[in-house]
Image 1 (cartoon, chains in turn cyan, purple):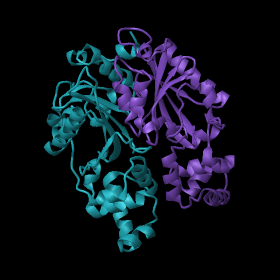
Image 2: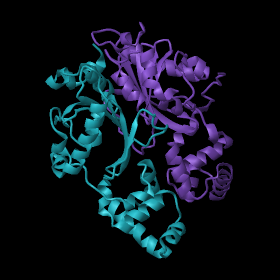
Image 3: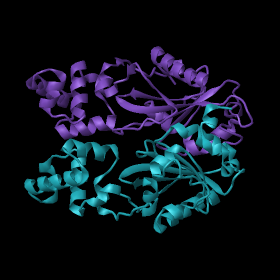
Image 4: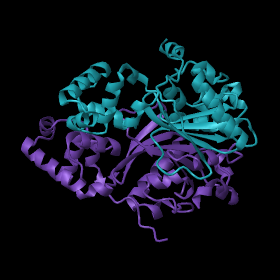
Length: 237
Length: 242
């Protein structure tokens, strides 16, 4: 028995016995806290997941998601979208790729069908960042309007716009020209952004926006909070 | 060509990670996460397309069947192989960052069980134990180090486009890239602000990146850290004649 297997409690859970191959990989990738691996069936029931999924989707270690539905954790609009993606993958046997913003961070998610052993299940792998190579021809690229800006929802629409522009490394004067405002107005907004989010300098803003892969057009999209609020409350206990 | 990679891997009878190739399908479809399976001797048994990009190649390349020491500089390859063997010997997951073409990539080296009912290694048609290496661009400011994972460090840095800089300029770039102002950086590096400004100007000329915030952005994208400048510069990739 490998350490990877013994290190994980997943192998002892009944649900994981249904998909040993998968569990083996969920176990194996238990050490990747920045890569989320989940096995979800076409009804949106979570079969298995690794520590990366807990870290990324914000549920504490002591709380098991196995056997639970996405709709219990996600707002209906997102759970519905996710179920459609899962059904598309499991029925067509084709993988899909989605680039989305989750809690103010760009994630790349690939949903692939499981094999003959578990036909109704899909493997969902997410990691921060965008695609670095072209999406393969046999993989369908899916766009989503659902943008979750997480803590950035404390900002006004204008502040968000300015945060994202400054975050690209633009100077104050470049931002003020683009938005037809004075430098002083932009500076005032910048201070307000800093106060709300705890950014002391412009460099902090650049680092945040860049490392999370955030781009200016996000300020024009409708923001949605993907997780139901009570998940966060449970987590904090 | 490699676009049809899932079927290609099935054609060769390659079944990896368990009784079926479901994980091959998942990795082949993934455009953001590099995956490689490497055996105990350093032979690359499997890789996906994102792995090619991580190591500076385009879609038309293939590493399959190649050994790490064919692909990489001997020192770089030997270090890589040692990590893989260490991971297998300890049956432990390792995490290590490499800098390739001036860009930080984070590797997680996972040992694959060599035997057992769901042996991944034997399913891959290899009698040798293997590791599964996952790599991604690491540009997070503060990545949490997971428990039960051993963090190891590389001795080398492949500077790529950053090799036009002098050692001092590289240091200035990395320090300014953390968001320090010129006076702060000058204190940090124990040089005069004026000298630092001169370096900054030369960096701007050489890289086309000027302005404090643009430097921060570039360095954040590359994942470059001040400590990286102490590593031994190396050209990681061998030229492959195809």
